[in-house]
Length: 464
Image 1 (tube, rainbow, N blue to C red):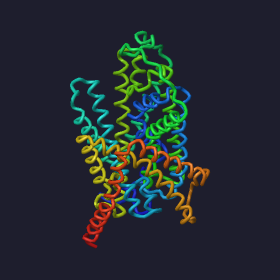
Image 2: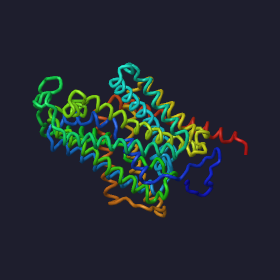
Image 3: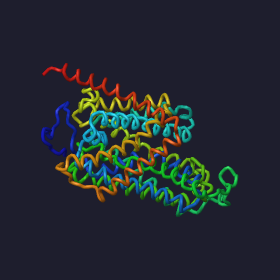
Image 4: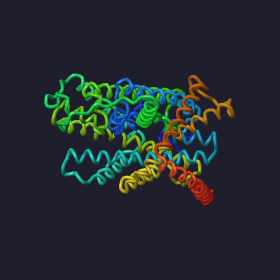
């Protein structure tokens, strides 16, 4: 039964501007697992092993990425509990640093989420083409179809969309757990038991870097794991919709980080159990190679089937989250006011339609460079959130804080320093996209002024 909240009856009107407060901790974990665990875990182990071909170093960066996520979780748990509004980190930066900072965070977060939605849809299309030859060559059509299908699912109601998220995330966890268990239980297939790769070529020995080269490799490895862990904060996108947010948001964030780390640890442990580290290195399909070692000729098919089913959870989560960001900006007058309307099922319908449309644009036109630029903003947004926590602690000491960040200010400072180091590394390693990111930042100000002006005119034009 829908919980009654002030200003909202238990039987919602056909259209309102209020979201439904019906979500709990389980959904928070489901949306984080659904958003985070996807195509990244397929590629990342190979990238890390190529620069850190030693088991201790390989696992060290996975633990390092988890530590960064945990430090960030302490901070966002406080912010999410103190400012429980749907829309994600946009709300924190807007309150602490003003509307323009909020606009930058919200706009980049929304576009990044829509870009990721397209990327996941494309992976589903590619894997589907491998599984079913009749679908081969129709990657973009499949991507668009999947995006539209889950938009229709969420259009019905928040309860229905969140239920789909719970089921698909649970299915994802079960499938990956079963795949991991198979790696430990089933003896390696005799065809590949000699140590040769499926192509028949023996892997070459790799040298472990030393000195400065080792430090640089650790930075690259940490960058890869931090990107792969990103998404653990999914519950903060639904602050208005979470029951007892002061308790459930911190619990949801903490449980999400622990769950994601446990799943990644199991996957990588199974991977190195089945394959030698030098066979993992540089292999963008290492998990598929491990499945082939375990299941033989059918391994690739089994793995791709698992990934297609698992990525459906990611599509649903990304659309849920992206919708809340643009809804929040519209609610606060930083985008078209009509986008803040909510249907009787608790779904911001127009915000959902816009998010799906932008995702389709990315999928059709393959804006790889734009997505790479926006990926920079993911960690930049965390950086702004950590700064916002410092500002709000100083400026608003009376703000009710049901949860306080453990270890503040030291854990906050550590998370902030880690974020700044990550951004510095990204700037050094990808200067072309960094320059374009700065250009996009400069363009954002006139866009902010224009959208704010349009939103204000639209509001004043409405009848009193």
